[in-house]
Length: 488
Image 1 (cartoon, rainbow, N blue to C red):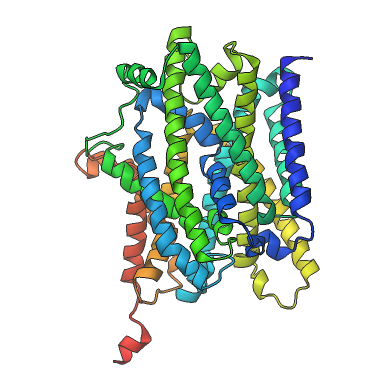
Image 2: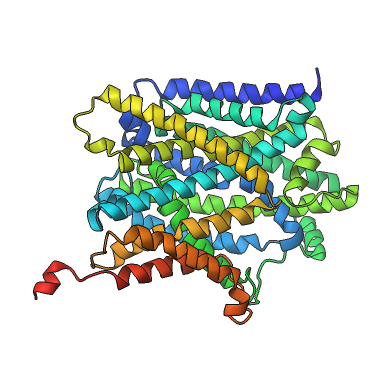
């Protein structure tokens, strides 16, 4: 049996395990199970499973690859992520639980009105679709280059097959299933990461202290960028990372859908804080792995860099087959959380926020289920289209692309929630969609001309905050005082 065939059997076996979990957890499931898991998820299960969703194939492949040129600079962003989770836990989660929301965008309906609500939901749908398909594309690309091509399996066929497989285990159980499949996948991903780190350290004959010294000598451990004008400076990265977390986690239906599936606020906050500490450690280990990969590549004379270095060493450099297997298990463990939760969350948001399913008392449970399945399958087709699009525009370092996309798409969403939470003014709902489209366009123009407009200052991850401030300013400019204040 060929090397590639064995790897394919491992992938199929892994998927069979996911199907078994889906079958078990989806028994007796309803629409409520699909959307929020009947609010019965265990907080510690959600906390651990969310690691897989947050890390994804993008982290698994791209983060180690950044060490060659950026050292541990990405950890500045991770520190920002860590701070952002506290804001999510103690500002946003209490609002969601107090209002007993199924879709978090319902808050915008209560506070700002229908146009703001629909606009917020549509920006989430756009943001999550782009983010999830970008992550999914990267993993399929690696599978094609290093495994499937040798077996004559095309990128297109692989993409279609993987989406069909994801549909098979998510279409019925939704969140109720994903909470458990994500836990399984996180476990495999972390184990694969640790095995790979241990193997390379052993091959190089390095202890943990020796590893750090060797990486420092090469400049790989440099973390803090003190150049305030640079796009990757420390405070820009921390600030940008914090607001990316607030946007991509706290204002993201996929991530919050799992959190609000926990029975009470206190346990959900435990989940969030536990999760943020585990995520901090996991990202550090990924960067450590990146440094080790570059040290190993230097010794072995391997020229691969960036997104290619980890898969090349694991699959093409002659390492023991067990390391290749661990890499593949880790990779596919990173692949599925990138898409399964996104498909479920997008289905939930479209059904609840756009179609108004929760308010459709004239629809039977059976009709709601039929509509949900159509929406679920439609989003899978949309995913496929974006995966093919990203194949055409791939620039070789997709983690940068992902963060840039987040800066443009989550900015208006952040502005809407901030306006609702921190002011008591009423927005002009007719202008909200226009404002939310205009803000990213203005941000893009500023970003493309930042050095000229800002005297050499380069915009980094604070792009999201700039975008949100522009949208917030226009919302304020065209807002009015509450009726009570006007009467006084």
